[in-house]
Length: 71
Image (tube, rainbow, N blue to C red):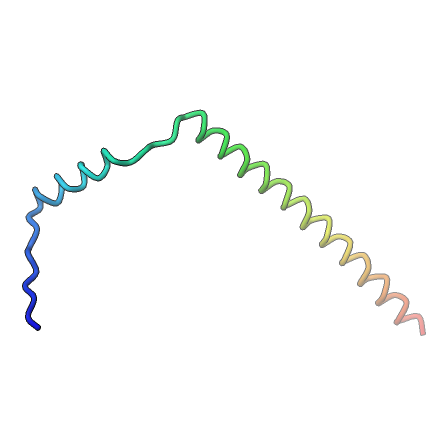
């Protein structure tokens, strides 16, 4: 099976890339800002959740160790 691949010239490649970019539906500035704000808000919320969870586990483990070392 000998299939010859057609070589693409750099100029043809650039033309094809431009044609494909014209097909792209770019988001509006407002959509981008809203999506970014949601991502930043979720990052903050998850950070606070994991900070709180870590503090609770740390406190619990310290108390368990204190109880165990008392014997």
